[in-house]
Length: 291
Ligand SMILES: C[S@@+](CC[C@H](N)C(=O)[O-])C[C@H]1O[C@@H](n2cnc3c(N)ncnc32)[C@H](O)[C@@H]1O
Image (tube, rainbow, N blue to C red):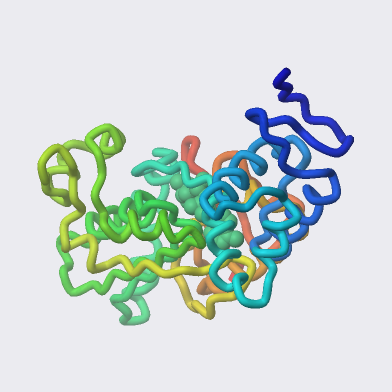
């Protein structure tokens, strides 16, 4: 009989294949937490087991202990650990996700930052999309920035976009999206910033050349400093409180005084940091670094 019950006792029968003992489940969740800050509680056990099984089947590995030894082995870990983390990432995203936040970005944050930069004679805007998934977030940011300076072409716009999923980054870099992924892009922006190839929509070079994609694990500092805005949305939700605190602290160090942090609608900075003050417009929320 096939059971899908998650018990605290030893193993689970998932899709007829028993994969992890309790001890192995803990070994894997500790490893994943240490490597990338993602905290997998017992209710994510089915999810973890199904992703592990897929990878183990690809490698012809039969049990959890053998795979654990492989993924942590001196020879294999530099390749296999990133592959495992990639397989575990949830990369759901969309263009202009959380429209009120993008309205706040376009109508309040960008005009303020642009005015501040002009006062000091700078014409450079730098934004980081941390946990950029398949690219919709950084491209949305770049499009918003292009729109904000459309009558002042002498501005330099830079969007740094990072993730630890290689597969997501590859798609992001390609910048090719199906029609159903374009629903949240206003028609005039689709016409202006995308072109069609067969039934797909491709990001125009004007946008692409403003965005630089890179592999980066948010457990580590990436050295970016004096940023105007950071988007890190729907990423912290997978971290525990301690990891969230460390991350937000690093973000504060990456931003200019008065820079802005956008987080996901289900995330909050309450209890995490007193270095930011919340601003909102309608339902859009952002956090401003207290100078
Ligand atoms: C749900 S997606 C969110 C994408 C986008 N920010 C948005 O809100 O639409 C979460 C992304 O965070 C990335 N991620 C999770 N943990 C990470 C880490 N430690 N370092 C870098 N990226 C991470 C995942 O690979 C995934 O692409």
